[in-house]
Image (cartoon, rainbow, N blue to C red; front, side, top):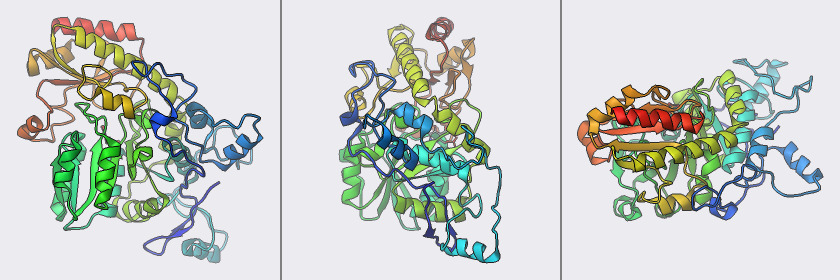
Length: 460
Ligand SMILES: Cc1ncc(COP(=O)(O)O)c(C=O)c1O
């Protein structure tokens, strides 16, 4: 098992924190593999982005292999991180449902706190079940280190409370998940941190707005809910020229479709509640970064500021979810493309927002930085707000629900649900229109989803 033994802020030391890939690919997702169904030319399920596993055993296993080729995404998602130290040889690791860890002697406890000896101390600082998931995710995202937390919001807040102080400035994109927007607007600003929204679709806007006070540049790509795509490489170059950190919310894409760190981002966050867990049965969050940044996020942001610890049970469920991530994402992408095509062809629909449609304004950029286009679609009906609500109420198979990335196709109305945290005029300004409907394409048979959407469009 890889471990971190480093001094913490409060003198507490920890062992068993997530360390990272021993080896990582420096190539961008594009250099790694041309994937995708549309002009990407088809994506096979066996060869995802080629980051190496974080796990020493896997590296050893690779050495024994007659073929030294790097293993595919699904193989790594299934095998990486597994701790083989279980005395019974359990193929699936046991869940360490414990809040604390017993020391053999008082001296041993002191030595662990002082960082003189490895070993677990307390689950808020590290736990073997969480560590297994962290090892796996670090390898899949191509990050040095990973930290799992209680929710996506726990991930975002743990990062920001670690790195910002009163008087600092953060620049964020205009389209953000509603609670992330509220965290910046009602949380950060309350503590004397200036938050400014910049339309990051055009990197020139960032050049104009960034200053020496800017500590963090933050965005989602694709963004929730209107699917705007941000050029990760271009924004990272500008931010780094002012020594600002770049934090990317990669929830919509997952590490299977996009690897922001390979494109220059410093920190990646995920709501693992969504595709990573994949079954709508848990809340979880993930942070990925350099080992140096992670040390601070773990021991300042998580330990002292948010306490947003992931439960071992939920960590186990996310680890289980990762085993089918590639398979599920391929199906989400297939269904997403079919739904987008159906909507675009409908006379009832005014506009479709889906990065895989050649008519989408940022289609070329999406193709360049994503492996495929994901399973999230937004659209507007000709009849606007009222027609949107009628559409939702007419659905028979698809569920009216927030969240995304589940097996079920979920449909919601951002203006009155996930993005009701924005003032109406802010929504208008930031492109979240009152009539927008958001679909998270599920894993059902596509014909059934399409039939349901078609009949609901007729009744809308
Ligand atoms: C893009 C995005 N980021 C972050 C979050 C927050 O995640 P959680 O609900 O796990 O706190 C969400 C939730 O919907 C989201 O859609």
